[in-house]
Image: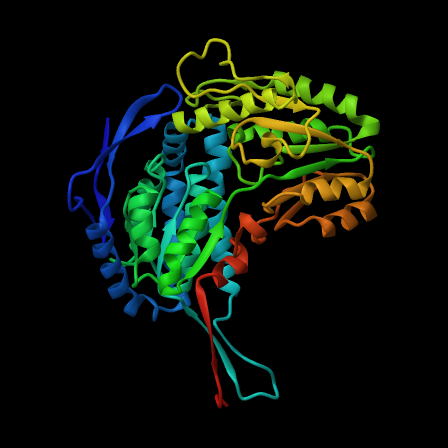
Length: 476
């Protein structure tokens, strides 16, 4: 079993202030494979003190110095790429191909893009030619970064890298359920040679370390990715110190499939939902299908879901792995059973385990049809391989159904009519709208409306989250 009980504070791996062990479970077999420590207030205080001290010199480093260190970090990341993929596969049950190409690949892509954005970013600018005012972008200070288990290194890179790039110092709390990738990233930071105290890592749960971070008077900003429920608690706890809070929370994305959609629109939509075992906050878990093609779409959806294999995370191949934990497994099964009891038609999958997988948190790709938007499976974020199919007649009805949610992270639409695509995209209330399955390019902003959060990650918007804007008059 891996012994990962130490924290990274002030450039060193140190023991926790008091023992508080937690076993990390491999969701493919339900066996513990590592042990970590859950931190305490004393550990957070030490890390904050180190970060606050380091900030005084780190904020004054030149853009060129920070770029040099980030480029070294990228070099180390590439060298240890396969280690990261193995860590992610073990901790969250991601199939090795997915853990390598998509999960670990996302961390490298964000590193590369932030380096590019930093090279182009101007931290000092004049207001305009007629003004004597000068505008400065300055690092906000000490940041508390709290990341989730479903896209571990993706979210770590989206927070840590722009914080480093802008001259901030930080304390990272990765998910205690999937912490090993974060600890490996801390080793990479150390190997790259960042100054002591700039980056610190403490493991812990939300109620303990997360609460200490969000309420700490010497932390200037909190960036959190996770559930809407936890985001609300963090916002309340941070309010006392008026710190900046950036939230990327849950979602209940709609995918509008019009009759004039491209041939594989339905099948691609199924694969999108089921990838990562359904554990993506912007997954299009409500498929709205125009009635004239409804039965055809249902047949295609069921056929595609039944083709998706479920297997161990340690294996390579085009399959999905388990969900992350027993808690998550039980929640998903409960919601599947609620869909059955509320009268939706179970067209594929269901609450029974996949054949041959009696150990591990495996769930069949599940399709519900004849769903109405007031059912639990259409309203609540399931965070598993479960899709609801809802029929509609007119464009306006589809838009109304998609927007009838407290969330607003990612929505999708499928049509070969470009004018209609543009018109509908502008009406959907979400931070991202994906047309015809096209993904976002590197450097584009990601974030949500309403209870899907605030702020944006990625690109120049991701840098600006960690900056204060200062106006200086009489500069000229």
